[in-house]
Length: 168
Length: 83
Image 1 (cartoon, each protein chain N blue to C red):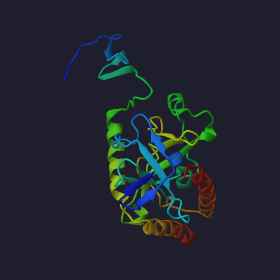
Image 2: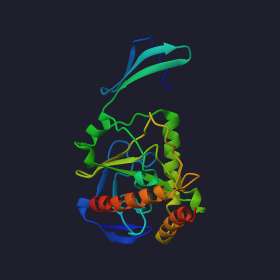
Image 3: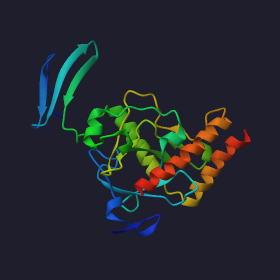
Image 4: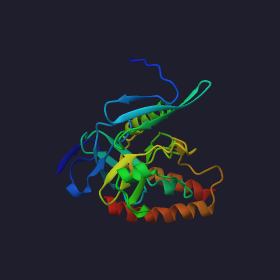
């Protein structure tokens, strides 16, 4: 399938790479149901979630475990059933990133991650009602960054490469 | 807007798939039980609005060219190394 996008021009994508947003999809973008995950640069953990239905809409996304390795969440049975997720390994998480001109003000939404079943490619933005994770979580490391947090991020980064290969 | 008065334990039906039951009343707080199909997203309004606004902001911010994204990552990780 060929789609025309604002950022990447005309791109050809395989039907099997289409991610189908179910239910309310991405809040505020309920009318856009089909997306494709694009890796533009292997050296960053950022990916683009490009809308297929509207070529001008694309979100920068990141694996929330890169942002904070201790990310901890509970997906409701309703949601796992809805997305037909049978094992935890099927679920892939992505956080929507808000870019700002000051790089240290860039944030990721940890409160409402996208959950995607990598088997059937059904996805949904899930709101974690029981958690305190912020909608704007700074990507600049917490006040005192350590060698350890850097190493953890780098390790997670190689994980997401595998993971994005699965989805892209 | 349709306004209905309900007592504790009473319910409202919307179409044939949605049922909202008043399960508890304490002062100014009311607990409601919502039964709806899984495909229907049910959210607290104020939370819904915050997430929606952030998504719109993110979609607008995503105009950045990809080169900037790799620069951004370099900068974010470099800051850690320096510290």
